[in-house]
Amino acid sequence: MKTYAIQGLPNDKIKEFFKSHWGTPEMVISSGVYDCSTLDGFAVVNEEDNIIGLITYIIKNNECEIISLDSIEEGKGIGTSLVREVESLAFNQECKLVKLITTNDNLLALKFYQKRGFIISQVINNAVEKARKLKLEIPLISNDGIPIRDEIEMKKLLK
Image (cartoon, rainbow, N blue to C red; front, side, top):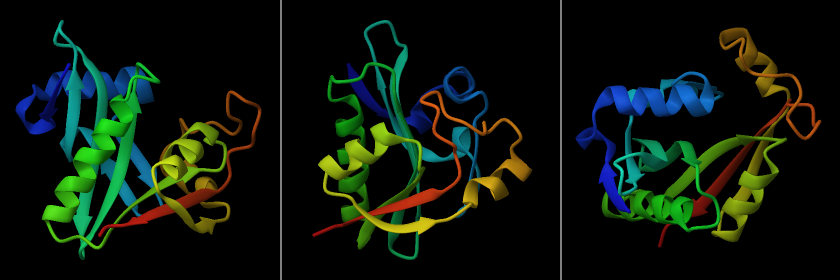
């Protein structure tokens, strides 16, 4: 496995990864609407040159925001290594913190990020309802049967 800046990978490969895992490279959250295939990020690629993990981020006002994180092989440290790459880059760019937004139903993300030092900093009630107006593909109910309603912002201060 190797980690690359996604700008070094073919854009069609990145777009295909997002389409197969998210349905579209478009991410709609309260901080904005993003085409994840055009953002900065890192990817982990296996021996067959397939993307097995990918993270995207933006940097604004000395804050780094993770926009997407996806690992197709869970429990192997891929997501952790990608988050560390972004944290290291953010620190070197003199960012004060790394933040992200997830949804209330994403229990795996809530667990994952808290284990890595992120704290819940804000709950944005009914934010997903607004996002659905822009991205109709967002389901009403998660695979676990949890209504998808709220966004949860998480932050980690960098030292």
